[in-house]
Each structure stands twice: as C-alpha cells, then as structure tokens.
Length: 490
Image (cartoon, rainbow, N blue to C red; front, side):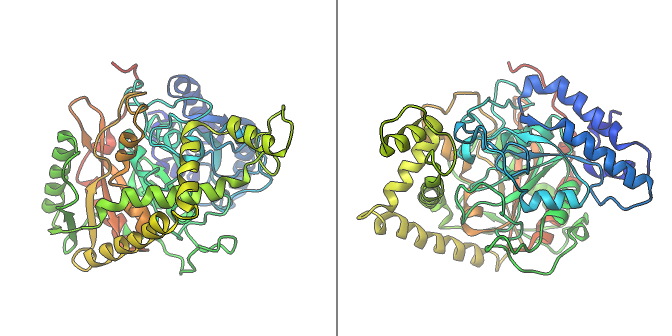
C-alpha cells in the first residue's frame, strides 16, 4: 500500500513507531501530487522547500527521542485564505495575488506545535464567495470523482486535495457551508466547529459573524484528531470562546443507543434530488438499526436561512472588503488621474464578478433607507432561527439532514443563475446562521457514481455528541472506504 493512501491516524502512528521516515512520507505525497495535481488543480501554491526543511528538523527531534506531537511529520494542506508567514495568501483573488503575510494564523501555529507539515495552499472561490470553486482568479479545481464536475466550494481545493489523496487532511473555512458542501461532493469528512471554538485570527475575513475554520479528513477519527489540535481559546480573537480544553477523541465510540436523532420533516421537501433523498432515507435506517431513536421535529424558520444569510453575509463582506482599495491593501491600478479613479480602477481590476455582486448587495442593504428593511430584519430573523434550533434540541441530541440537495454539477451549469448556485447551500447555511457545529460524512452515491454527504448538527459546543453520532454512522457504513479513480468526466 502506498503511504499517500493511508489515513492521517495511520501515517502518524507509522512515523511515531519509526516504521517510515518523515521524508519518505513527504516524498510519497509529493509524488502523488506530481502525478494527480495536473488533472485536479487543487493547489495554488506548493511549499516543498519549507516542507522538506521542516521534515528534517522533525526527524532529528524524533531520532533524539523527543515528542514531536500528535500530528508529528504529517503533511497537511491549507486553504489559501488562512495566513501563513512567508507564504503567499491570495484568497484566490487578483486583489491579493502578491500578498505574503508576515505572521501565521493561530491555527497554523497550533498545527505546527502538533508537528504537522504544511504542503501548500489550496484553491478556493475568490474571497470564499462561491459554492463551486469556479470564481477563483487562478484556476478551476476539478472533482476527483468526475473531472468534468465541480468539487464544491468555497473550500473546493482543500476537499479535492484530501479526496485525491494529495494530503492527509486540510484546513478549510465555512461561512455558509464551505467545508461541508465540498466534503459532500468529494466524499470526505468535513467538520464545521461551533462558532468561537476555533480561532479565526489570521483568517482573511468574509463575514465575521459566520466564518469558522475547520478540517477536512478521510475519516471521522482523523477529523477529530485535527479538532483536538485546532480547538481552544485564543486571546488574539475576541470571538474565541474561553472554555476548558477537551479531548474529542473520547467521543470516538461506535454506539448511539439512547441517542435521539431529529429528522426535520418540514425542511426536507422540494428541490432535493431523488438519489440524495434515497441515500438520506437509507442513512436514517442505518442509525435506527444502530440503536438510535429517530424523532420527527420541525424547523419552521430554517427555510428563511438562505435569505437571511445573503443579507447578513453580504453586509459583512461589504464592510470587510472595504480595506482593499489599492492603497492600504491589495492590487493597485497603474493608470489613474485622481484618488477616486485609483479606488475605482483598483477594485474593478482586483475583484471578480461574484465578489463585486456581493459587495454591491451588502452595500445596498446597509445603505440609508434600506438598513431597517433588510439588515435589521435579517438579524431579527436570525434570532428566530437560533431559538428554533434551541427548541428542536429540547427533543433530540443531534439533527440529521442531507449536506446538499444535489450531487456535484458540471462546470458552468449554474453560472448563468447565481440563485441556483446559492440554493446548493440550503441545508448548510442554517448551521452558520445559528453558530452551531455540523459535520458532513460520506453517505452514499447517486446513479452516476457521484458522492452524497449526510450532515449531522449538534447544540453549540456539543462536538462530542456530534462526533460520536457521526463516527457511529461511519463505522456502520463503508462509503468512506471508496476512492475516486480520477478519470476524465464523461
């Protein structure tokens, strides 16, 4: 068996037991990248020189009998909106094409403290705005299961890298489903932690009250190991929750007896693909057979999540992206006559169509005369959605819904209609609006052989319950063991 096809847990164990050297692991994964990356296009930047230098340091420490951490020597990929000291962080935008941070995000520091090695930075939708990784300024990442189709977004490169076995795990960010939806499309595990559990310091902001960093991995166990490293209070992030550190691996128990799983009957209605619905129904049976109690619940306000999201998220994006003006940050136009023209030309040249669309939407809903009608009302509806979930969790431990209403679509299929694209996030957005933890696990395949994800949602900071249920589902199915062939799409 090739080293690149092992799970994160397996390769970490082999390194620790000195069955393989860290350089051998790195050689194998970079060889895999060399062979597969030209087809998949998951990476924007590769950092071989830094990776091999770090591998040498870690190997010396290991040979000297030192503890190199739970992720010691394991190569990890990073979404390109997370700051890496001395390595370009572009957000897949022309605006930040040449931006090199002078500091590491907190999550990068935590990965390095745990012994991980950064392989490179992965492709994404520009400024994390999109559901397909088609809005990237640099390239279009392909879905390893069918290269004619999208990997999902906005963390498409991170999902595709793990799915194509070009990284043992990766980091993504999730503002409205940007970890869970691509995890579903690429048949990997994608975990969006509770808002505030993982530091956002060093994450380039899209919508600050919604953004959350989380891991992609091949198994629930691997994602749990990553969460153990990433979670924890950070003084550099004012929204970081100051909670006692937990060991989430305690949740890796194949048992759901006594657990109540809520099925929102009023939310899973029209717009869902028949194959996805069939996989979802089968997943319900799987959990029932594993000993869980299945209970019908209602989420009457969840249907308003998408409208709420596209007001709140765009308003915050409009504010956050105001700094990219060609003077303080980002791309600067070369030919201009005055300050106003410099601003206009720099932003026109630097931002792509989807980013411009969201900035304009956000500026509109925040403008005088419209603020109360849109932004204020959206925040009020957000409160209703939060309360709706709290009420639902009085009757169940975990909620289970499909991750996405459809499987991966072909490139350009939704390009003419932004609304069609936005609807791909209908099952993921409510989780961000309410600040809850959610996880997508491989849950089957459609008639074309394309992956389907099943999503579990828990109460705030109830990751242990969430992971136990997800782990049990994974252990009672074999979908996560299937691998893509990475062949040209039909």
